[in-house]
Image (cartoon, rainbow, N blue to C red; front, side, top):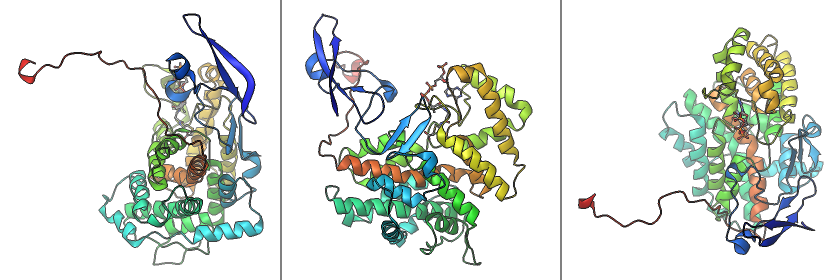
Length: 431
Ligand code: CMC
């Protein structure tokens, strides 16, 4: 939406240019600078996109100062524990929570696509036995495009829908196959009579030798974690998916790019790094030492699971996860979990410290999630994979929103060139 109000920008030589203001339904206004270069011959400079909105989007709203997160208008606190992950996926993709019939039909579409092609399954044989699951995830997800040519016309809404369903359905199957490869166990085929997370737990932990039924506590906890991780507007991986797909690339390749971006420790890789950090700290007695390291500008150590580009308040997801952590550990009779005790004490000490208070650094979504995953028996190298399964909903919803937008243009940032100015070529014998 364009506001009637305008912003006047005065250039060094005194010329004034008028720039329109844009506003959404909520959140700060934005200065529309699309005509700036044309009017002034100048770019804006904003590395890390700290002050730049890259698109209009009607999917997720965050108010970082207040610690608010809403999917399609619904507060995360109301969705968590009340709506299943598949209901939330429907909400993100289609804008509305499904009715009972709509959910049944949506579940049918998803379960119809849970298997992966046998040739794709054999890809895993080519990976080293100890390959990181995220490495396999990037490769295998990107390869989906080689198998599903029948849904690759991105201009066709039906094709887009089928691709979206395929990715949401196959991600747990691929993820569990990564784990089985690491374990040297046979891949378990999906069981479509189970829930989305129940089936995932089955594919992870069942073997052909024994009966296996997923633990309902684990199933419920995982479903809730998936809801909390489902979308987070224009984060690094979602922006990666958007930028990759702005060229018209196929959605499987674009989601593979998103998985690659998520892997980094500043993003989804933080959940794995948090447990490494807690183990390194080892005991409550060492917390002060590590807090001092995190504050020391000459030490690269950071408190993993702390801080956020947008939240300058407690991350609402971390608040819910901390609560769930208590419940899950209690239900699984793991009440004296030393890492949880350590994490809570670390949080308490950090929040009282001036350094963290001044910079508004609070626990983020990754701080407590790994403790739950660990209690569910999920190994550390799979933590970021869990994030990837859940975030596929967001990636696919943003991809669909963007590709359906008639104003879509290729994403192409500009730069400030700082290399050498023009110089004459010197033949090799004279260098
Ligand atoms: N420990 C110690 N200091 C920190 C931390 C931290 N975790 N996070 C930020 N700071 C300091 C930083 O050194 C800087 O200080 P100064 O102003 O004195 O230079 C200030 O706080 C601002 O930090 P920044 O790096 O400019 O902030 P950013 O918005 O560019 O980075 C972040 C955000 C999440 C990458 C960063 O806070 C971080 O590295 N956190 C640890 C990794 C982590 O938990 N990542 C998960 C993010 S949430 C889930 C997700 O996206 O997947």
